Each structure stands twice: as structure tokens, then as C-alpha cells.
Length: 324
Image 1 (cartoon, rainbow, N blue to C red):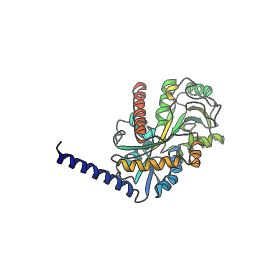
Image 2 (cartoon, rainbow, N blue to C red):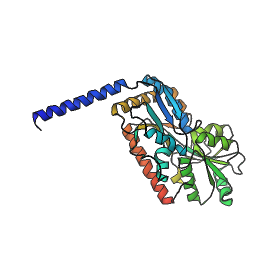
Image 3 (tube, helix red, strand yellow):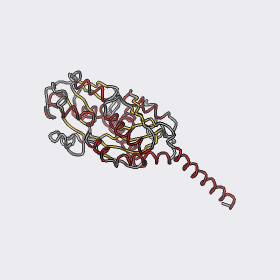
């Protein structure tokens, strides 16, 4: 490289650095949309709303939550992938939208590993199978006995086709040689409403949205997916304890944007989220749901999404799971 070329390259890099700095300083220049790809009332919505105010405070700009439900989160994720990558439209990423659904749905309208910019994993949450109080069993042994003796008689609700609740329950059915009919909803909120109301007897849901109903007695927890028993439910076993370790996977909830976001903007949003998670009140609201605060880096979150996607692809292939 001659001196003229070297100087030109140095100037180009300097210009890029200046441009990136200017971009970061200019962001945010307007209200930020935080999209939730499910209906109000579910865990994704809870996490989004817990984060929106402190995130906006840290960024110095309003953050509004926008629910875009449908297709087990696919509708919202597809919409997010098509937004301008300027940081003003970001979304809550879930294991359903970025791993489970892409693994089981060959026609999904986005590339989960290439169409998004991972920013941060906010929280890891347990999952739970719960039943309406009218269900004729109140613990795991009785639950398994009832559905084994009555194939096809009972149905279960989930937040949507291809989501973690759907895929994990299908895995549970495959491992236990049982059959319960899937009833998909446009988010955990509507699914919970119908289960609490007795229209559907069983639900596989994330614990944060189901826990208030369990603690109030409107639902009965049967088994949880968590590293150990949940403090709020000390008498409820984990899937690992009952011999179903493949189902014992927690969910994640993080922030992502469209592909092509400038690193400076990503880092600014990430820094704001980390700052928000330092607030004891924010941490308490997340932890009170049974969730664990994570707060990892963009690179770590990207690696986590890729790893979970690979896990669910293997689950789908091994168990020969298919969409309803």
C-alpha cells in the first residue's frame, strides 16, 4: 500500500467513525416504537411494558408499546424485519419468534438469523403446564394418568401455532405417548382468558403471565420448565424431575431490531437497557414474575438465538413434529 492509498484509507475510516458518532448522537430523534408480537396480557407484553418507560427515560425519548399479534408471533416479527434500521422501531424477541417457530415452520416469511439485529436478552423465564380447577387431576402423576387414559378428550391452549407453548407441548406428547388437541390463540392473554374461564382445560404458557392466576387459585400448576423448582411454586416439580428433561427449557425475552442497524445505535439502545435493568424497581418487577434478569451483550444474544434455533431444529427433526 503506497502513501496516497494509506492516507485515503485512513481518511475513509475517519469519516466512517465520524459518521457513526454523529448517528449515535442524533439517535433518537423521535418516539421509539417497541413492538410486541403478541396480544396484550402475555409475558411478552409484560416484559415490553416493564421495559418501555425506563428505556425511554435512559434514551431521553418516549417509547411506546405496539402489539402486533398473529401467527404465533410471525406477523409481528415479519413486520419488524421490514422496518428502517434507524433504531426507532425495535421489538421484543422471544424464543417462539426467533427459534421455535422458524424451526418448525418451513414457510416462515423471514430469516431468523439474518433479518434481525440482536440487541440484548432482557430475561429468562420458566414455562408451565397448568390446568383449570375443574380438571380431574391436580398434580403431574394424576395429570399424565388422565390424559393417557383419555386420548383426544382434552385440549390445550397456547399463545399460537409454532410458538414455544405449541412446540414444547407437542414434544411432551411425543415423549409421553399422549394426545391432547392444540387450540392456538393470538397470544398468551387470550389463551389464559379461555383457560381461566374453563373453555379450555389445559395451557402451556410462560410462567410470568400464568403465575397470578395460579397464585389466585384460578389455575393449578402441574409442572414447570426451570433449572430448579420455582420459589413461588415450591410443590410443583420441574420437567427434569419427572423424567422429561428435553421439555425443561426456559424462554427468553430480549430486544431486537431490523437487520442493518448501525453498531453505534445498537450500543446506545443496549446501554439504555442495561441502565434500566440496574434499577431495583425494574429488576423486582421482572423477578416477581419468576423470571431471571439476564442483560447480555448483542454478540452473546445473537449466539443464544442461533443456539436455541439449532436446538429446536433438532427437536423438530428427532420428534418429527409438524404444524397442525
